[in-house]
Length: 321
Image (cartoon, rainbow, N blue to C red; front, side, top):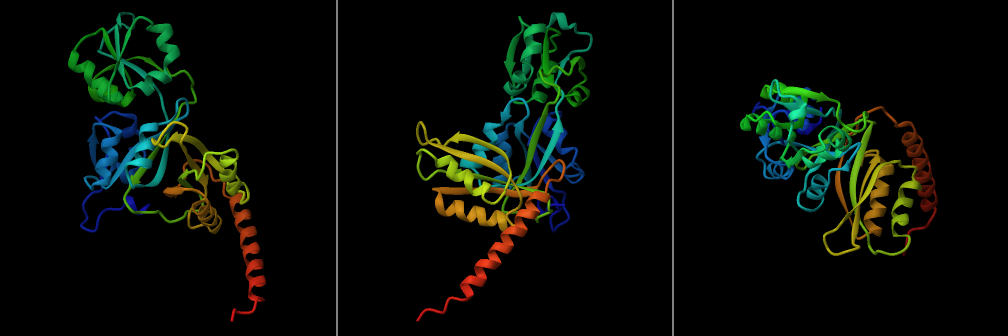
């Protein structure tokens, strides 16, 4: 169990912040983790609220979405972790995401005139909405669960929400249509974040970093990528984000296989830090999914052999006068 998920020394339950209200995909994700599910769950109004509450100690850990298989990175999460907070990812959670159209009991889908949900959910269900609810107005909500609660508060059978089956159960709604996402292999990756804690290496880990370029010039991205290629470190995610300092000024968010405790990864980070404008460390943590450590293990062994070879050569150099 990662240190951030342990109970405090006083024996109190860990406080877990998540995007509420109850019934969101974030809550669904944390409920798959027994240690988090048994904690004191604190619902918060937005992703930035979760990160802020974790930063200021209002909660011990926060659970936030990182990326979706259809829509890609959740930019509000990554930008806040990159530019506004100093938190570390403790683990990742990957869940299958099933989008459902929720309505009041007995409401016919043909009568739906308004659909509440979050923009990322709307984007994942474009085809369904275009074909089945082309004339319905799409109205924003802070979360899928808030959307579900909204139609209960409205009490209007012409209103629907896109959300989880869990939300339907919690708020007494009916599932009018299920699996409405455009692509069936829909998954979302969540991160558990905390302050000042790096979980121990497990042998099946990821490291997340942000690399700020020294200069925007031809070959600058290649120079960054070569550091990983030279060490046979596999990248599992790479995308760019504006640095907020002006047009054309970008940083790169990178997920890589391995842990900062691995000599090979540490050597790579050391070189990047010395050659680029800056590197922000977002954490080394247990990876979800199947193990893929054999390539890293072989590369690590090769690095140790090369390091020993260099040490032998340097041992032959007489000490300076």
